[in-house]
Image (cartoon, one colour):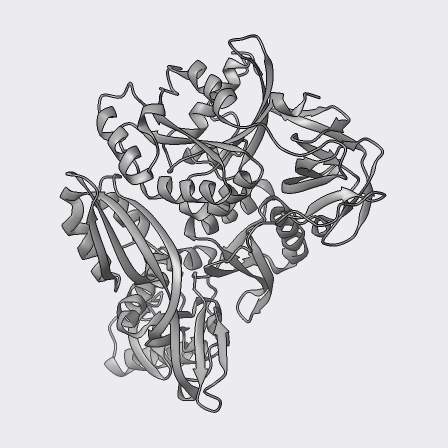
Length: 603
């Protein structure tokens, strides 16, 4: 184990798509942790979904051995972090286990919304920030302008900014030297009682829970008895080691190290990310400050396609929760879909990723209901009491409601000024109210809007990107609850409400939403021997309707000529049969119908 003055713990933070994973790739290649034959891009992104989308979802740690220019050997612990606004929680956990951060800025795009918010996160934890201008070899690179932005927007010294191209490997040696020179070594004492922070964990089917730790004091050895401070449970350490792309056993971790332990933990729920690990025989006086409690903003229910797979889904959710501490779920049930879970997500991309991970990693076929946010409802009988509702099935009768409030966000959008008009039109359409507008320089504007979170959930981010050709950046904070006109939109099939399709909507948007859902369902529901009405209603008031036409059997085919009364008799008989069939006939909803309702907002 290296002494603490030869250890550096750092993370890479930036806006989405500014080159964090590519820079991590170059640092790993420089240290020859992997030979060129086995190397692949985004080497720390070990999920297929991360590679396909080109995004980082999970923070990943790796130890990089480095020999400095003066011949001193260092151990650099790197934590690669996500850039999307939905995964800020992952970033905050990575920052908690480091002393310094490389702040990446794209030489073509400049400082964007997440660059600012991630920098503030790092400053809150007193991290040493090293600005790095990436992609300097791109034709669109504007280094003098980006340096101005670093000075003015970030308040950092642009003269100390490193110029690199992570893709072609320019400036990587300077980055490694800056990490050693500018980032302080970890504080703490190896002789103090053990204090280690759990910043992540994953589940291994053969070895149980693998706990990812950062040691702030003391040592941890194979055979040592440890205790988790939040639950008080004790375990014996079977293995300790470090991350060098694979798990490498060292059997001891010391102060300042970032590594892992395996202690025969079989139950997923025993480990809490943010908990403090200490020695069972010589515990520390007080736990480390954990992470701020994660607050989900988007709620949706998950059901297995086959209700017999409920237990499998429950086990999968437990394992996924271990790997993604920001996922929150509780049991739920639906008349149409059986037993499932009501889940809280940090945003719509988070929901999308969870759905794909359930299907790919755990082979679960699942149905998600339409996403919703948490509303505050005040009832007439007791107007001082507020109830929180995120599920349309819990929505009280319209006549009992005194008032309803919905969560609002402070949305910060940084955009080139030539896209300003279209973006303002989009924000107005989403019920946004502009509170501020600042010209950051000749070309870039920052606009601040107050808008309902429910309007941002669905297609806002995609439309913002398409309007601005990918140049606008978006970041938001939840601010307060404000009065709203809320309604429960029921979808009726053949006159029967389907609880899994119900949505809570703003009254002004209810007609458009209902019409789109009905149109989508019409295309997805297979035709029957009778007509199927699809209706969108608020209470008893139907506001939209589509009809799936019947499969018509030609009962007159065998009538060759003859009296008209004979034909009419056959048609009347068919009509009676269809009426009876409609009374007893149930309409089966295919899985694609539920997905179509979710996509109804993309138009």
